[in-house]
Amino acid sequence: MNLAAPFAVHVQILQQRLEAALQSQYLDGVVISAGIPHVYFADDMEAHFHPVPHFAHWCPQPGPHHFLVLQPGKKPKLVRWSPQDYWEEHVRPQDAYWCASFDILEVPDSRTGWQSLPTVGRWAYIGPETAIAQEWGFQVETSLLVSHLDWDRGIKTPYEVLCLEEATSLAAQGHLAAKAAFEAGGSEFEIHIAYLQAVQCRDVDLPYTPIVALNEKGAILHYMYKRTAPRNGQVLLLDAGAPHQGYGSDITRTYCTSAAPAEFQDILRGMEKIQQQTCQKVHAGVSFLELHHETHMAIGALLIETQLLRHCSVEEAVTSGKTTTFLPHGLGHMLGIQVHDVGGLQKNALGEPEKRSVQYPRLRTLRKLREGEIVTIEPGFYFIPMLLEKARAEDTTGQLNWPLIDKLRSCGGIRIEDNVHVMANGHRNLTREYLP
Ligand SMILES: [Mn+2]
Image (cartoon, rainbow, N blue to C red; front, side, top):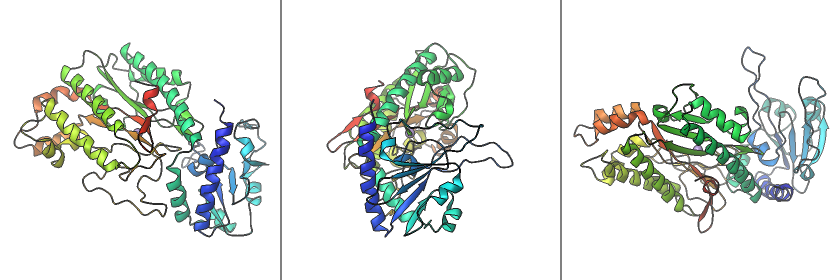
């Protein structure tokens, strides 16, 4: 895919947005840092480097210590840290599709980089080295500027959609390979390796650590381990994305074998239906809080249909918190340069916070979706021991079917997650174009 033309448009759009944001703060320009490496305490080892997201949004140049110098009416300037050393490989991206959008200045060390930055006028600095920036005369209190930029960042440019589409099609290859490894009886570790092999990435290159959970481990929402045993699992919950130019997809699928209890297979089919129905409702102007609530209503109905819940209405299942026992997280989140992308809890460009929902405090966004945003839709259904014990203690009238719950606990949980682009009159489900 040739990204040069869409990238040039992307930078033009960012430049327009930036000019409005700078004007609102009476600023002449902004310097955005690529970031600095994190060194572990009392050690000489560095953590895997992640660029400052504001920098990555403008420029796919990897690595630390670079600067972007941005001001109205001027071509963006990249101050590229390019040390002469024999310890690391420093790749020069001369011919990369994005280079033409920047004036590039190479500097041999970060001090020279700082010295090259503008000194006249009112400039802001976004990055981790605020103490040094202050010494150089930069304004480092930038929360209003950042709120403005974050709000705009919700709306994806066509270039960003292309990057997320590439990241999606790549992750789909991984998911298909992982599914095959699961069906062949593979352990979590083997399934994980099959995923990496298919997407041709190291772990650290992925947008986040994949969750590869067999059976009961699917109930641990952030399960990080990859066990070498057991093999021949009945249920696989796989939450894994893939990268493209700093963007990452975020996809979850749950599969089960015919050895899984029939009741669990029914719930899985029910969740697939609920997830697809929720995706169908996405369009500009729809309230994410409303979508989340409707998902809970649908899960209430599923609990009753599968006889996990008796003598209880759907309404009561939701208001009493019984559905939250099985779905304790939010329906989804913004997706972009960050996996949990910014702006979800803002009400506007001024950064005023959206009022949190009392009933659903875990929601990462709850306002009306805007055309051009990309969100994840990821309902789940889990048998989480801690929440089940609490529900059991509260269930004095025996509404929940505990023998059935206890039978299904070993299946762990279900999550199905797609990445959905919000359109004026509908949506585009990026994930389903590549993965059933
Ligand atoms: Mn997600």
